[in-house]
View 1 (cartoon, rainbow, N blue to C red):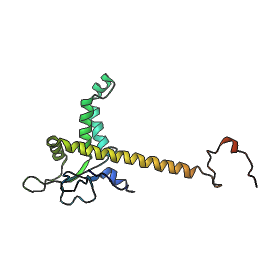
View 2: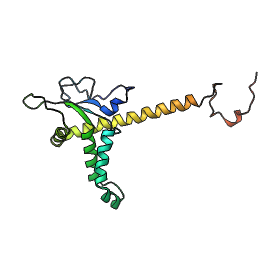
View 3: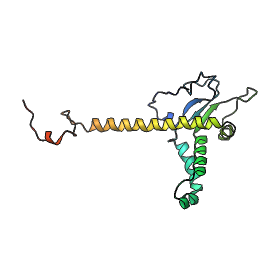
View 4: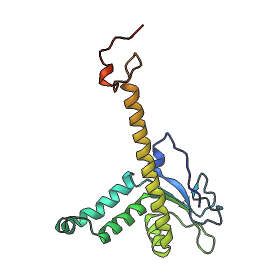
Length: 172
């Protein structure tokens, strides 16, 4: 299964999602799709997206008493929160029923799909998590680039020079 996508300068890709194949045979083992065509495919946003985090938080807020009593999030609550997060992170799909009719997208329809096709949730979690990691790595690289470029004085020397070099006069 191939997984690759290009970093988009548009942060909407992380909120709106990327297309994920639901049938390896149809898409020749391509997991992430540029064009889902007729499908079957589903678009999922990052686990850092507002969609995901709001749904995850909604589940954990309902269970705050249990979480506080145990001082951690029990696996069943975490699993339910992750499931609701993935359902909320789905933004569109191209799915047909057994008769070849287009199935309209809805979060309830996604919930039904996940309950009957257990591997789909794992696939979506993989992509949504990778998008999240990709977003954080991009932000870290951007922050590092900004730090290096804004911390370099006009003379081109980086301020992290060795202490012994500070105050020395250049030799001619």
